[in-house]
Amino acid sequence: MGLRPSDDAAVYQVADDLALVATLDFITPVVDEPYAYGAVAAANSLSDVYAMGGRVALALNVCCFPACLGQEVIGEILRGGADKVVEAGGVLAGGHTVDNDQPLYGLVAIGLVNPRRVLSKTGARPGDALVLTKPLGVGMITTASKADQARPEHMAEALQSMQRLNRFAAECLLAVDAHACTDVTGFSLLGHACEIAERSEVSLRFELSRLPLLPGAAEYADQWLFPAGTAHNRDAYSQRVRFADGVAEELQLLLYTPETSGGLLAAVDPGALDLLQPMFRRADAPLWVVGEVAERESGALVSVSP
Image (cartoon, rainbow, N blue to C red):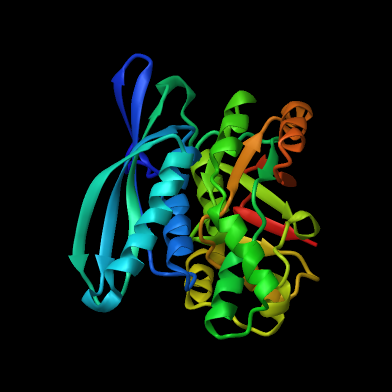
């Protein structure tokens, strides 16, 4: 699995029962605290391994730091990333650093997966339930924070969500043989949903009332504090998305807003929910049923109703 069609990571089979999952991601700071930035960036980078159903084995640092940043700050960023790799059960084995005007940090992440159990964007089936494992809105909240408009309690919840690995969620989705999966990151919920719909040759239907939002996200959307990526995503995907009457414009834009280290969006057999939901409840982990998969419709690949 590589570029035809593209997925969340490359998968390279090395034996009948073993394949490598390879991915690379890095981000600019989304929080001011160095350790938290490193942890969020690492969780974001590792997420694509989980979106493919893999387990993390190895990671390499990707570091672009200004010379003026200071060794103590850089050390805290790297410590945050290293702790997340350890939490994922992987080994951090070096990396590469270059001078850069703006900080950039992330990981090359290598995972392992059984090639017969790879999750991808191509298997969603009509009648499947759509589930989401993290609330939406970190892009709104971090943008509001950069403008000094976010309340501390809202930023704290966003940070907690961004630092949470998708490891447990991926394990549960594999246990119920999820049909399709992706992680919700820079292309927004709607952008990544379009990718599943297009590659699975189906349509996805979301119910706005079921979509979980972090506290503060709708408030900052009402204040029109959208990042630039929101407009980019709307321009890229709006021809494939249909909103029902009654969905306010600011909520439409919220669903086009980039997420950092977002949750997994998956299509599962409705019968699997009886197994899946108790797994998440027992672990006190979040899971929402947010819509359904339908036969491919002419025009819109993704629709959103109130």
